[in-house]
Length: 97
Image (cartoon, rainbow, N blue to C red; front, side, top):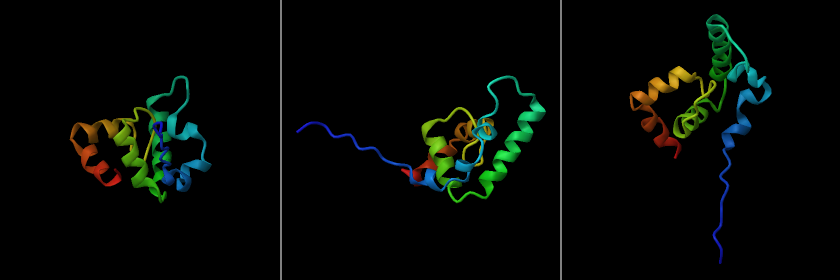
């Protein structure tokens, strides 16, 4: 019998509030974005995350997979780097895996 590959679906994605939002809110423009505009965009994205039933699972996923870009689970790029630098990613993702 050959090897079997199982695709594990992230069920939380189906419940995420960001599914109905413009991805640009969470990942920014492809071109230049001023610091002020970026901060305002990230605040708006994090406000969506704050009301999302999938926020914790999304955050844990981003930390576990090393997502480098965008706002995930209420954490921006700098936020995630800080959490991971403090070893918090391992603690948070222990619940998810």
